[in-house]
Image (cartoon, rainbow, N blue to C red; front, side, top):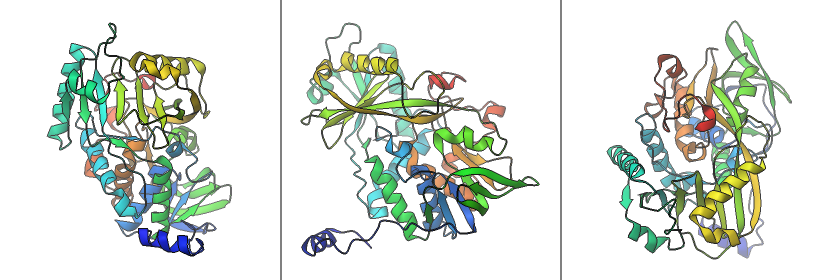
Length: 416
């Protein structure tokens, strides 16, 4: 079934009796050619591109909960490609280009809104760093513009321009950045994958791997053994726990990242803004709530909840940037489990076990990477060679010393 304006009108006139489920709820088969563990954005996108772009069949996505219940539904919905390093910027620009055509690709309203993102500048050194970043973006085909204080004040007059401690001295803007409805991304990719024959199996937790003579033969699940020609892990913050079942240790730590939504307000924030003097980012949803977040919690955890010191830190940064924020009431908050890699950059690669593949280490930048991650992971599964935009995201970069340290924090996952 294709969605269209005419279809909506027809269903409205006929009592909405013709709608069909967005995807099937099949029983698992005894075996598949490809098993993707994790029904989040990356896993569903991988399955979709593996079936549509590479023409592969007999694909299953195994999700221990329900579609949209993990990190893909627990983020602040921002998309952008304002990166600096050669290992990152081409990949994220490719992802942003895929975002721009995603709704037409999937025939689904993912609410892609390119309202722009602005990284504020508060020091002269930061201006130099952001100028360098903007030039790197342009060299890789992305858009970037340095804005003056006057330009920013015209667009965001409510920011604290008179703060002596954190004066606003300009900003780096990417006008093609913006936000996307996170749930709709999961639903759209699930519907698209299902339409190409992918079995999406919910409430099916992987409890182990069957590995014989160094070859992965399939997975043990809460619904029995399922054989697989190729098995692909794509479970974000649960990566270390899952891969330990294959006796693998990853260069990853898991921690919680909290996000917050205020009560609904009238339109006040036209784009996404980030505070350059602290880790704070904010946008306004179509429902009117201010969606914001900051640093991950400073300890390792698998709980989808956070601690109060981070709440205080995020609110302090928000108040320093937007004093009027103090009058808004917090509506809800949640936490997602982040898989923090040693250099803050992701991994898309084969493992030492034949037939077992890994996608993870996205830290808190995974949502914006969803389309490109799915495409690059599908390419790896289909061809056993890395995609050109993910050629730097290999396990061996840590051994070879080719780390992609975007933030310059070294091998400290809690700082990335």
